[in-house]
Length: 131
Ligand SMILES: N=c1c2ncn([C@@H]3O[C@H](COP(=O)(O)OP(=O)(O)OP(=O)(O)O)[C@@H](O)[C@H]3O)c2ncn1[C@@H]1O[C@H](COP(=O)(O)O)[C@@H](O)[C@H]1O
Ligand SMILES: [Mg+2]
Ligand SMILES: [Zn+2]
Image (cartoon, rainbow, N blue to C red; front, side):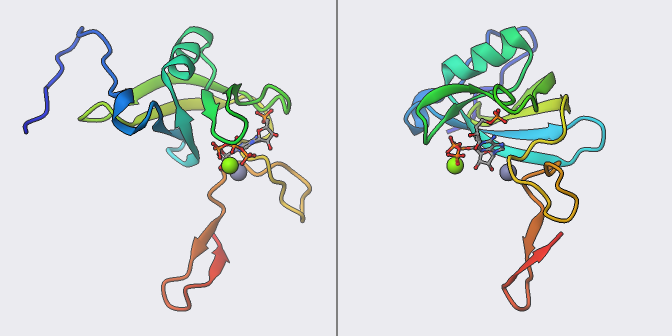
């Protein structure tokens, strides 16, 4: 089936039902294009993100609306929200407001990691390496 092409100015129509109410949200730093984190969004979380202009998710372990930074102060200010071709994934393009986007710290510096994606799988050994 062909995708419904949505024209500019069309009402937002996200297919939340497709995967039980949640869609993935990729968070990208507008300054350098780095991917900072990936989490999930339901309708409520997207609405909150659009009104607060701060990246808000649905926490799948806590089952609660979660504005990133609520406790840590590491808010992610939303500059743009991109929607994919079939309206079931989004990208929050953000400016980080605090120390970083991750909730883990680099043990060497003691600082909050800027991105959750600080490790990679080495293609040869299949072991983890730092990026
Ligand atoms: N702060 C984070 C945080 N920052 C980035 N991420 C990433 O975002 C993903 C969140 O998606 P999930 O649905 O798994 O979230 P979650 O299961 O509720 O979070 P955890 O139980 O895994 O901590 C994680 O897998 C991480 O890659 C974070 N995941 C969880 N947190 C927790 O959120 C809480 C509030 O932190 P702040 O929002 O920074 O104040 C703290 O308790 C943190 O432990
Ligand atoms: Mg988790
Ligand atoms: Zn992280």
